[in-house]
Image (cartoon, rainbow, N blue to C red):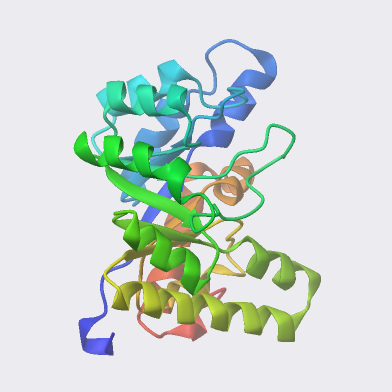
Length: 259
């Protein structure tokens, strides 16, 4: 994609861990729906929420309220199970992102094996598409996974940026740059074969710039870091600063990133 064709960069804010705080004590506070509304006011373009099978943070009533009460697109992350597909069909979010899920994991640990799970994923994707949802698949930056996503009829792929962020945190600069190059190549290839390319997982102020600068990426989904930063500066300020850094990187003004 040439610089003149570069697409705007959207920010999806994941509000899962507002629900984590609520569930730690029980009751209704803090309210993830209020957080979603605050995120939109602060510059987010959409809201992401992961309804896990064990309901460790977001619960069913949150999804229903997010669809009903927040005037912004909801991207519902979920496993490709019969239960989750039924919930998505009933609540009708704007988009559904299928992710791998392991009950013992603390957070999503990698991309969905779309190439190896073609038969298992075909029916959920078809049902969700037929309902009008935009279907996204959370994948590693590999051509085989992108091609499989296209062949299954997904409109979107979200590239897993977790390894890139882990390498950055470890100070493994050469390996981090190699992973960033892999993400960039995958984004370009995904765009070439007709997929809309998103990215996310683990992004923070010190890692968002290089990913935001990839021209084929049109949306970043960021959550845990923003909720954590909100403890110190407030959710609106954290989102506003992330938005500023994304926009600076997208414009090529890397001097303003992490300034």
